[in-house]
Length: 286
Image (cartoon, rainbow, N blue to C red):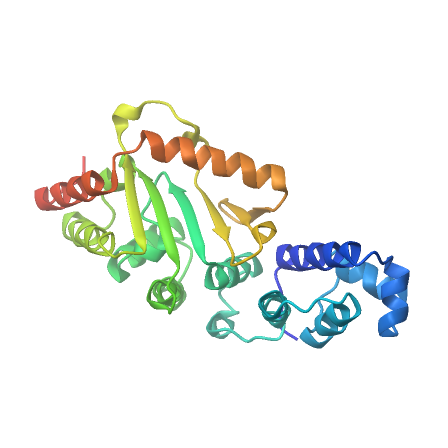
């Protein structure tokens, strides 16, 4: 069985417990109905162990859950533990936290992201990604850098999926002004950014320097939202050597409110694309 992100195990367990509570059953009742030990139900509900799709089906049968959409969603969520995604080919160069991130990104319906320093990975060109990776991780050899660039570009398939990921990105103006890889690489990156921002499922907004101090200066974040069940939403904070996953309802509300404040201070979508194209046309950043 492949690795399932711990945050997804907790989310799945929480939803299964909610369904059990709605059925008026204790964990002991559920265990007896499906022929398990109570500790197995407890481990599943607390996210301490992965769960197979057939186990989810057995629990939902015991709880009398007949909603086909809900059953399909939870079955698919459990199936993540058995799915071998394309990123498994890069296990040697990808830490577990990055694989978790890709799994969440692949399954999300919508992503809201704030980026304060560099172009988001889903919007990078190969040349920009290569220069950035080489600069940030100078200890890596050429083959490792190319592998990470390949992963960065492969992730972008979510924007071409059916349905595609709905991406709403707020970019600090510094992202556009910081020249990565020289003027030509940066200009090409900005032209690509303006083009991809014209897609119907992508919304870009630039937070101009004139906005002054704002909550975004504390660092970038991503909010992943998933179909049907809002409780599956996750906030991801990136650090140099790891990622922090926040899934409490209070965290989701706080970061959603922060994103709302940020995009309200940012330039409108069309004005943002015009600014990006303008900077690209000058052939330089700041």
